[in-house]
Length: 126
Image (cartoon, rainbow, N blue to C red; front, side, top):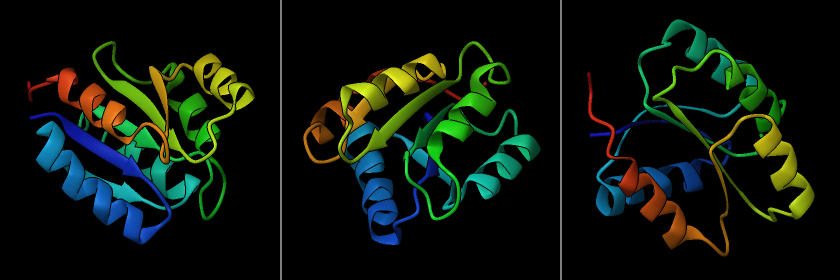
């Protein structure tokens, strides 16, 4: 089962995504963070504790782009990063992709595509 680290500052969305990832993608959310610093601290302490990081761009403190840039050269070749945000404009998509994320999805328009992407990851614990 793919282990997801969820970085999302809205508790309702985090709960909904946790349930949806389990039900529709067969993934397990192993931990969550609501701020940039909290996310980076957890990632530093758990470098092998996740298979995919799902990152919201706008957080309670800091932003997801900082987290994505932090992971760019630190994640293993099998780990994936995904930005899942509202209003994914072309400029934001370009910035996220240049920060090394594997995919960018708009929360309001691409929920099914997001779940399908996560389902196809099919990463199992090593």
